Amino acid sequence: MEYSSKVLDHHGIVAGVCREIELAETINRIVGVNEQQKVSTGDAVMAMVINALGFVSKPLYMFPDFMETKPVDRLFETGLAAEDFNDDTLGRALDRLYENNTTKIFMEVSMRTLSNMGVTRNFFHLDTTSIGVHGEYEHSDEEMVPIEIKRAFQGWNLRPETIPDIAHHGFRIGPSGVDRLLERKHIR
Image (cartoon, rainbow, N blue to C red):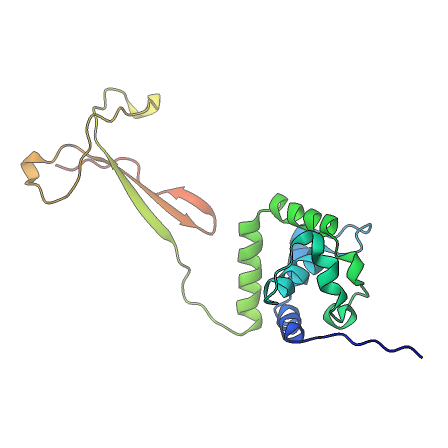
């Protein structure tokens, strides 16, 4: 009989949390699983999270060495081996994440985590901003001609009669992307 020893450290806790929030399953649902893959994209991401939270952060080409000292069969439920987590596998997983919109994947994982942890949310954060421009508007809105900026305008502490016409454009960044809120609003 042959015995071997592997160091689990805190990696078991990290893997347990990844399982609890369904990290690999959520990513695989979005990205898809190719039957020719031995390591799914979700498992590759989970391995990178374990590595990143392992206080050693090995580069991708040294990943099999990192995984060699870990009990891979305990961390992953899919019968994988340390050598399966090579830099090609991890690189392809990163490519798949990029191709499938990393922001969307992050939002889905975050929402799944909140749901699995029983966290209720009453609002979503939206980031808004507005841009004020000054210039002459010799063209109609239908012509869609860019506005030439004549001079910079700073501060709102001027007297109303000295404030030039300002065109405001408002933008919101939220779950659906960037939306334009305001078309044109003149002050005076």
